[in-house]
Image (cartoon, rainbow, N blue to C red; front, side, top):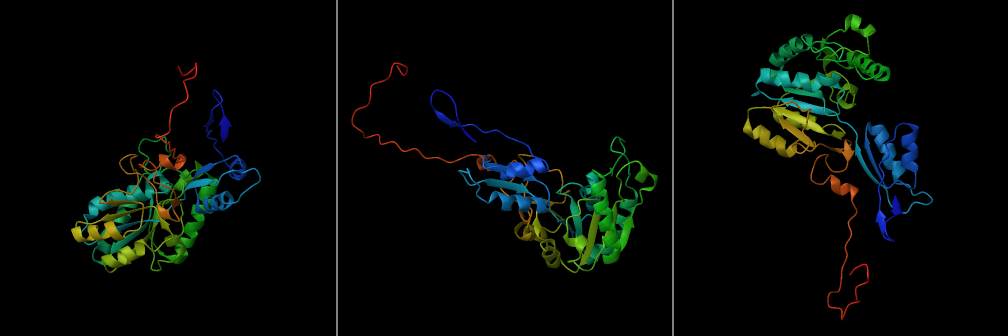
Amino acid sequence: MKLPYGSGVNRWQHKNVPGYGDAGEAIVESPKVQMIVFTGSREVGSQIIQSASMLRPGQRFIKRTVTEMGGKNAIIVDSSADLDHALRDILYSVYGYSGQKCSACSRLIVLADVYDAFIDRLKEGIASLKIAPATDPACEVNPVIDKNARAKIEGYLEEAYKEGNPIQVQEVGSLSEQGHFVPPAAFEVEDPDCRIAQEEIFGPLVAVIKVADFDRALELANHTEYGLTGGVFSRTPSHLSKARIAFQCGNLYFNRGITGSIVGRQPFGGFKMSGVGSKTGGPDYLKQFMVSRTVTDNLMRQGAAPLSAEEA
């Protein structure tokens, strides 16, 4: 909002207002709001972008929007990868925070040469995960955020049994009565266009796809509407160089997990359907909140007005 204050001088004074639910909708539609920053689902984010583009009575500027709308993030495991190292970091990338991070891995693309050996490790790894309340220091897989999230993930689990073959599904047992727990699961799929391989689930469920070579792995990694995070486990320099150029995501990680970016070191953000705006923590982020102005003064003018009493 543009508000006058000071000694007769007009300055811009900004007020930050959080919004949730109906309040958020009212804020987006208000002609007094100049900029909207949103983190959430693609569905809501695209509605905000559409609504913000409409001019409303009393509006005197075009609203800016910065959105972060999630991902369908892939990790590639090639034939030269250290499988034990890869398994450790993949388990955390998929199941840490019960998969409820926009950067979490939800697609595993594994080359055929190491597929069976990696799947054996993955089965054992999932079975060993400690499912517990978040207050338990030993917890590795916590409950999801609420009953709506649980119902959504359970719906995708039902779909997974139709679209793929279960690699490992660890049951939560009596914990289901203590909170919104869902089983950490992995399913092998053949169709890269199936729902569990394309739609953001936001839960501890990963689709695993076997491929013949690294080029096909990169092709499938990019075969999604999103472009947030991604990873490659490989000890082949040519594969890492190729992925550096061709892997379409905002944050790409080699031989480490794909969650846990550090502000200032790994500015975070994506493109495609993952968001609009500069990466959080990056050098251009603050500029989105600023207005560029240019003031030009003719220094060749003749004479100058005398100083006022206040200026003197």
